[in-house]
Image (tube, rainbow, N blue to C red; front, top):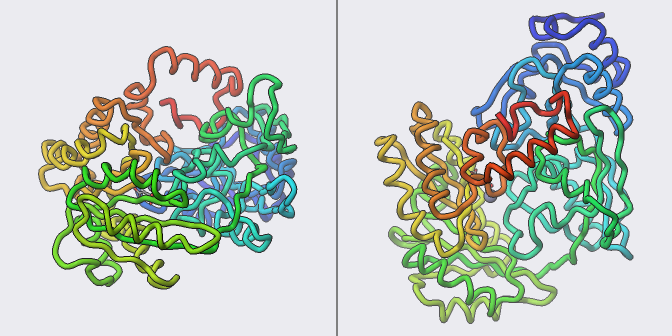
Length: 462
Ligand code: 2HG
Ligand code: ZN
C-alpha cells in the first residue's frame, strides 16, 4: 500500500518506490503519526516537515537511498540520535530524512591497534559499554551519551567533558566509511595512524555536519580504562580565580580528566528541577568541578591542590562513586533543567582562556541590553574556553540575543561554535569566525563534493 500524505505528495513520482526498494516497506516511514520525533529536535527549537523518513540497515542501503534521491534531485537530511543543538539533523521542509540509527554494528576491540569499528548509529553509551567490557575506554564523553550516536558526534566534531585529556571527536577518528552525494562509497577503515597519501578525506568529513558526505561507520581509537577516579567541586571566589588555576591544574594534575565551570544561576535551576541540596552554604561566584582519573587512586594530588588553591572559598571532595555522581549532577543536569524552564536561546562559543572571565562578566549585560527580562545561564568546559550560553525568557529576541552574544565573542577572537556545530542556527553569523577567503574555500569544497546541493542544505551555509 502506498500511503500518501501532504508531505509525500511533494516527492517526485518514483522516488518512494525507489526508497521502498532500497530499505524495505517497513523502514520507509510515511505515517504522519510516526514522523514527529524525526521532525523536531528535543529542545523544541527546530522543526520542519520530512517528505518521508528512511531507516537503512547498512552502508549499501544508504548508498541506494542517496542514489535514488540524487536521481530525483531531492535533498536529504541525515539524522543520528537527534540530540544536536543547532538544528543540523532536522528537516527544513520536504527533505528525505535519513535516519542512521539502525547502523549499530560494533567490531571486537582490536587490542593490538587500540581501535574499534562502530556503525554510525551506535550510541555513545553503547560504545562505552562495549569497549569497557574489553578493558578499554572511549575518549569522548558527555551528558547526552544515551541517545547521541557516533555518526552525529563525528559529523559535529563533538567535544564534551574529556577534551582536555583526549581531544575532541576528531582526535579519536582513524578511519571512516562514507557515502558521497552521488551514492558512491568511500571506505577507509584500515585505521592507519600514519598515512601521508594526500588529502585526508576522513578528517574532511569530521565536523562537516553531513554536508559533504554521509558517514556510515567509523574506525575509532580507544584509550586505557582508568578505574580510579577522584572528583572535587570547588567554590571559587571568581571566574578569574578558576581560570587562573588552569596552569596549576595542568602542571600539578597529570591525571586531570575534566574541568567544568558553572555559576549560581545554573545551580539554582538544577536544584529547582532535581531537588539536589545546596552544594555549599550561600551563593558561590564560580563553581569548578574537577575530575582526575588514573590506574591508581589520584586523590592525593587533587587533595593537595585543593588545600593550596588560590581563590578557593570552599570545596567538596567525593570519596566514592555515588558521591562523585552526586557532584557531577550539578553540572550534567544543567541542560535538562534549563529546558524544563522553557525554550532557551542556546549558544555554544569559545574564546582564548584569558578572555573567558571578561566574557562571563559581560554577557549578562550584553543580553539584558536586547532582552531586559532574560535570564542568562553560563556553564562550560573551562580548559577550552568553551562557554554554553543559555538565555531563558528571550525567544522573541532570539536573533538580537544571538547577534549580541556572538559579537562579544568575535571581539575576543573567539569561535561562534565551539562543539555543537553551525547547523541551521548559525550560518548567518559564520562570517564572524571565518574569513571571506576561508568561506570561499569551504564553498568550493562543498560544490565539488555535492554539486547538486543535496546533502543537508541550509546547514553551515544559508
Ligand atoms: C554540555 O556540555 C553540552 O552539557 C550541552 O554541550 C550544552 O545545553 C547546552 O547548552
Ligand atoms: Zn558542552
